[in-house]
Length: 130
Image (tube, rainbow, N blue to C red):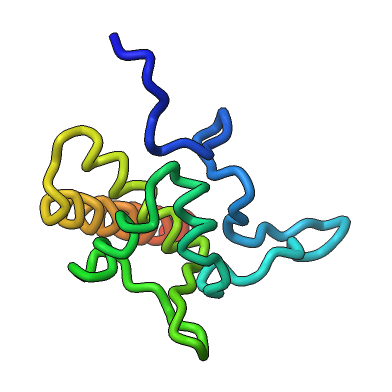
């Protein structure tokens, strides 16, 4: 068993990224959560690298092969949304498990499809019960 730290560091005990806002939950007391839209791109490549425990070169590679396509600032710098950070985190986990980047991208896409289908099924079941 290895005692080396995981490259996918920056995760809290529940697996969520520390310092990365998730979807904005509604609250009866305070209204919507103050974090921005999960698709708002404001994390720099350095910040994402620090959150995920990977060098910036890893993120640039993800961009070069189309695995994660960050937005660009007016100056041309990469800017990642919290949703893209989560996707990059999953790619890092899968590549750490031995998958190629191409295979990791495909697995992550299939996982997203399954999640979408589960959500659609839940909605259809709720509509039938109503």
